Amino acid sequence: MHVEINGNELILMTGDLTKQQADAIVNAANGTLMGGGGVDGAIHRAAGPKLLNECQQIRKHQLKGEYLPTGEVVITKGYDLPAKYVIHTVGPIWSQSKSNQDELLAKCYRNSLQLALDKELTSIAFPSISTGAYRFPIELAATIAIRTIIDFLKSHPFGQVVMTLFSEEDYAVYVQAYRNIIG
Image (cartoon, rainbow, N blue to C red; front, side, top):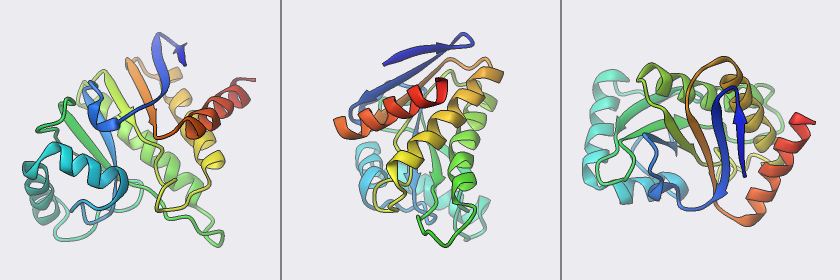
């Protein structure tokens, strides 16, 4: 699915995020930045060991040994990936008892887009953040992601945003979320 928003392009597709030709891909990272399972592990494997080395340096110097907070972002080179850069963000772990999860997930998308814009990048590819191991309900996550991306593109000249979804089922949920938002 391809749509135009304020001169920008939003694409929804299924595919392998690590193969995207975008200026940046977004890593649904854990706070340690040391790789892990799912998207995070796939990106680290595809990028090669230099990505882990750069993440260790960011963790040591920029984060002073602390974890990257949920919703915040850092950028690294893409190394062996087709993308020039990787923007790392930590999505919220789903829990019905937490009240700010929606905003934290929106921050992942908004902060990633803003960092890409600040770095003068014109294309970015996202996974469905927090819907795997972090168990965020995909229908809610899709609505938050699409609404946040549309709001950003309506007010910023950016370029191309690609939602690279893992399965046809996830793709269908994101398409439906888009249709619900635009009416």
